[in-house]
Length: 131
Image (cartoon, rainbow, N blue to C red; front, side):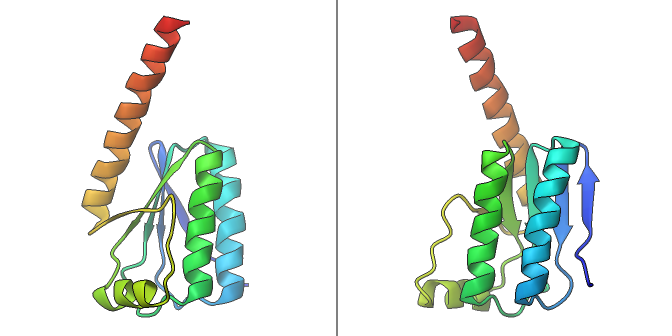
């Protein structure tokens, strides 16, 4: 069965979707990604969808579900590379993706993950001092 590679970059996981997504592949990605977060203790996931020309409601929900699952596992998710047509389609479908943060490209997405990690560490440090 076809799989989407998940690369580890420091404390983050990078997923670059370079093939057309279909429902079974999206489900496999969800399963593989949660397993990798658990194995690596990653604090962030960056999903590059710049190669996708179409994101239907199922794939949109899967991305949202992946972000929710990652968040429960203490990892932030940033989706990058969304094409204008994909953004328009998601809005027209009325599909909101709660918990999914977006950035224009991989560089901006990594900056967002690093900034989020720094903010979280400061918050944890403050909470620890109060205890």
